[in-house]
Image 1 (tube, rainbow, N blue to C red):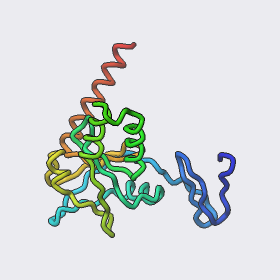
Image 2: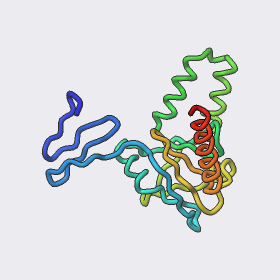
Image 3: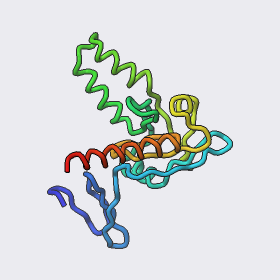
Image 4: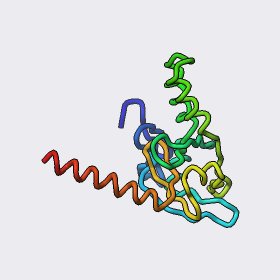
Length: 176
C-alpha cells in the first residue's frame, strides 16, 4: 500500500488503480476501472440496465452524472464522469481559442456531448442522440475503456473487436 493510505479494520481508504474495502475484517480489492463488455436488452420504455460491474465502478468513483459524447473514432457513445469533460476542456484551453484546432475540438466535445443520469435502478435512457450515432436498435453492448465506457451496437462492436484482434495478430507475425 502506498504511504498515507492505510486500512483500518472497519474503514475503506485507498485511492489509485484499485480501491480497498474491508468487510467483516477481511480486505477485498474494489476495481475502479471500466473493464470487459456486456450486452443488455433495451426495455419497452427505451431504457437499458448499465451492467452491475460498471455501476460498481461509478459508485466507487462517486460519479452521479454521466458526460456522454459521440466517440471521435468509433460509432459509439463514450460515457464517463464530469472529469472526462474537464480533461477535454483543459486540452482546448491550451490552444488559441480562435484556432481551427480549438474550434474543432469544441465541436466534438461540446456539440457532440450531453449529460445523462441513471435512474434509481441503474438504467440509462437510450435516446435518439445515442441511437442515431451508433445504430443501436434493441440491445446495447457496454464496453469498458479504463476511465470511461462506451455504448455500441452489438454487431458493430463484435466486428470492430475482431478486426482489431486480427490487425494485432498480423502485426505480431510481421515483427517476428
